[in-house]
Image (tube, rainbow, N blue to C red):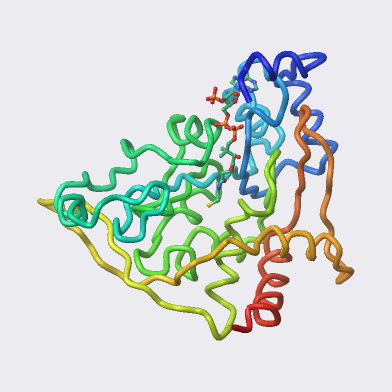
Length: 274
Ligand SMILES: CC(C)(COP(=O)(O)OP(=O)(O)OC[C@H]1O[C@@H](n2cnc3c(N)ncnc32)[C@H](O)[C@@H]1OP(=O)(O)O)[C@@H](O)C(=O)NCCC(=O)NCCS
């Protein structure tokens, strides 16, 4: 949607103050750990765009809260698996040989949205070391969440997702649906189902004095059923709470991450049977 169309559908612009009030009404409280997946255009016109959204989130969480966002860079992956777009096979060795190494300060996010990309560059924000599926965080738990992000199984037990799980953190879907709910990939790592496959991934990394193409194992992750899982999660009556409301014009959901992960483990084991 163009900015002109967003202006046309917006009655009054959202401001830091109005966004903070919306976040508060949704249930975002000081001291929480919140992993945010976002779409700026879904919020209606925001005075200050991504910066205003980040400031509002930080004010809502206060100095004791920790804000986390995905800062993935899916272009630093094994090129034989690329789909949008695929590249000719003859290019694969050239890419493996020449793709610049992951640099947490330089490598941009891709497909994470302008809010996550702006947050990545904010002073004091920490970014984890994984070349493909890094996360950014600021706040008291930021280093605990972003440290020691293992290369193998990057959304598994040695990832920021698992640390958020341990710390009883929350997920905020800000104008996006469960197809973007990355924490379900942690459940893919934990669940046992017949179609689960381990694949060989690759990425350019910097070592002490050079750049190299590293290879490592990963789960062959698949988000094609995440929307269905999200719908079933919302319908289920197992006692978990999903707070729903609007931030600006965006439909939002706030939930405890461990509720989603635990529910998804059970769902995958029941439904991904072949
Ligand atoms: C892909 C995705 C980011 C697209 O959302 P989007 O709203 O179109 O894009 P952004 O959040 O980057 O916002 C930029 C858009 O905001 C709009 N915009 C510009 N200024 C604005 C303002 N002041 N106020 C509101 N909207 C504005 C513009 O339309 C702009 O699009 P353009 O750059 O094409 O002109 C979103 O759908 C998504 O998937 N987000 C979740 C990502 C994620 O966490 N993934 C994890 C799964 S692995």
